[in-house]
Length: 493
Image 1 (cartoon, rainbow, N blue to C red):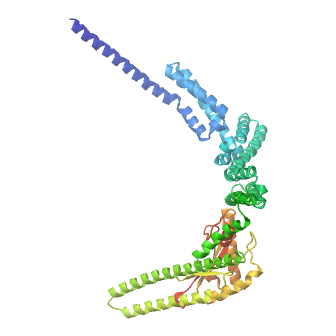
Image 2 (cartoon, rainbow, N blue to C red):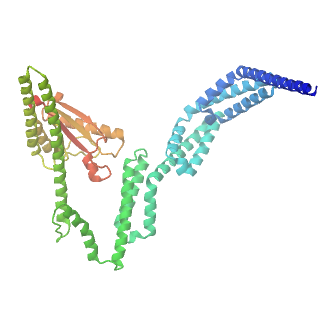
Image 3 (spheres, rainbow, N blue to C red):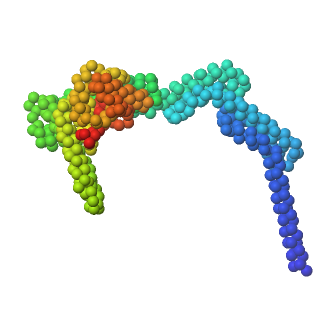
């Protein structure tokens, strides 16, 4: 009997638990249905407010909406009067709608300050200019609150103040990114009293830093030039520190002046020996330096010629193999095909002979002439423009006269005038300047050389096709160029 009673008691407990679970499930289902009914408008209004970034741009109305929304959820969870739930949800929807409207107005009225805020954030201003950023944030918050309350004049005043602060923070952050290392090096140099021993080099570094800072002040978004100036400044500071250490040794008689000069001549002699040039410096290093420069220039020209010859041989070999393969497969017309092949090879040989003829027209200060396959390129190193200008100068006309003679060597050829710049300046402005310079040369060819327009194409590449490093003055000079690309017509080469 006891066992039966225990069994019946267990069954009843299980039944009670199941009933409770069923009731809870029924209640949860009912609450879900009620939530869908009463929160539909509030959820839609919240989504619209979030889309307008209302939590940031309309904080007062958004916060009230959230409070009413949470109250409605709590009332529903506790099973309070349905009218209370309905009322709280409706109030939440009203505040979310008000927040969305206020945020939409702020998105328009505060567009400038919001852009400045984003630019400053992108420049890591919160990290690199925290004090200015914090003050800007406070002014921005004031502008939002005043606008939400309808005080347009007060909001505009804070808007202007915040915009100025954000831009200041952005500039400080950008300068910190690009100039902080230079400033640290200069501080180290000042502590080491480098200026006493290497004042010229140290002053050059300080001037480069000032130039970089000026460039950032004038155009903070074009950082190519400031970055390069900062790198040059870093080099000059380190160089000044090195020089000061050497000069100290000479002053303290740890090294004689003769030993210093000999130590500097030794690396030059090592380079000369590697170039198989006799390192004669009985009158100083100038003559040897000039001889080594000439050696390097000749080596580069020989390298270029060898690369061209290799490329031409590869192309010619591939063409011959293909032609022979096709001819071997054909039963008829072989004579005509072989004749065409011979004609093409003769045309290519003429192009090579014409290239040599053109190459002899220019000296190293006027143009560098090289080939890419059958295409001839005249790199007009002697053709220069005034800074930022595209008009041809009269002192360029003699060089252009030689260019005309070179073009005449290739009748009916297509001519592409390519304009190029260095990396300093904005991408868009460099592109525009390179195009204008190419078109200036094109117009001269039409007017002065009487070359038909259909043979000429002017293309500006801006800074996208450098041939040397933009980190050095000589490299940038090589990148600022006009290339004349001659594409011979092999039928009349």
